Image 1 (tube, rainbow over the protein chains, first blue to last red):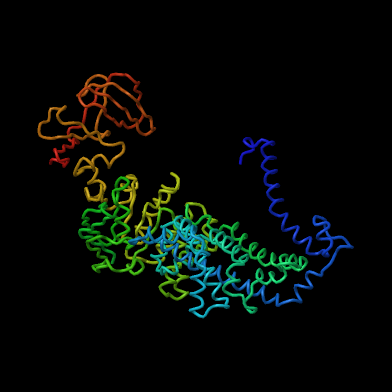
Image 2: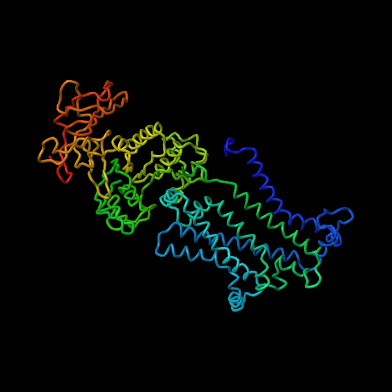
Length: 279
Length: 333
């Protein structure tokens, strides 16, 4: 960006817009975390105030840790999210490689078919999925959730990754073939490292909806042993009474694992090792 | 070791035929260059030889072994690409050694061969670096080194100098010529630059829209072009191609005369014309004339000459260096 073209006025407008967006995006998160440290009265009387010595309370966290197996819920959420991301990236990248690299009959049709999944929400098939899981005996298992989330994440992953894989130099892949690398070695050792930023993007896009999902855990795995964090938090929300301390504390705790995963992936987004591979 | 025979190679992408029956014999130790305009099929032909593209029909024999169904790694070839195609995550040393490692060669042997190749190309100081830390010329040397390490029967070069700047291109060209002499290996080289073709090749193969126009040594192509395409393609500046009718030759369709085979005089000569433009190159002077007899004519004079635009001059061709082509474009001899 040249200095000559960016007037100070313009720059400040851009910064204003970005700052505004940041505030809007972070405000609910901040409010959740602040209020999770307050007693019930202060949450309702002064929802926007930070916790003071008088209103400070850890009652929410105590409730969360005492009631139910919250550590277990976290574990379930983490397992489901991480395993699903792994499978989405693995199968998504492999399908994308096939679509981008090989000429075969029906290549375009196959690509379109796989992309249609982006437009049709998987929840439309909930009843059929439930019937299928019941028939397969997978209800109340984490496997059921992992299977559904993998299917849900694949279309977007294939769409994004195949575009990126088309940009990987043919010469590089051919050099690998001449050096005797198998197609699998070319995929894992040459192509995957070069599309790492795209993989990280896909991972982030896949991760957030899985972590936050309430629908499928509620339907496919509502058992105590397989509850996820979002489902586990629901016990504090009743029809008539809601334990806001506990809900806010549970949500605050739920932010951190996903934040850590995000930080890991976003580092990959920035790091580029592709420079100098080809001109 | 290192001969190549191509028999009626055809290659079509869909309905578009890129190679229309290529026959070629390459002897052991020859430096053969495929040259032609963009889209003539020269790169596709190289890829068919390498096994990176399947030919639609035809046979490829390396050392009298049919290899049409052999994967690239087992054909005993090595290839240098225009875009270098180095593995970005490996060091120079590992880049050069990967092929041998895949073949299961012992580590000591790999080290010895990489050491020898890097000494030949003076790459020793860079062995621990990654491709991103090298300049363009160094990267291309690594790519050439990677080919040498494999000790192939056939070296394949796909426009290896196109990404380098002019000075580096000349330098690397010399290096490749030197390598060919010291390795005595068979090399096949694709380029669209006829200077590279003329300077490096033992044998030039001129391709045009999927067919071979002529095969011969650089001087054969220069002195005895088989048709108007080769006549126009080989030699810089281009040969003057004149309609034979205008010169009163009833038998031929086109008369060709190279710019360096025309002399210029202010007093008298065969073709009277007006100077349109003059280019001074130091060693040469190029004079562009518009003559009544021949139309636009390029004349190449050696040394420095002063001619002014719009000046009237007379051009005289060297009769012995005229090329005559028939109605089908073929040379009349």
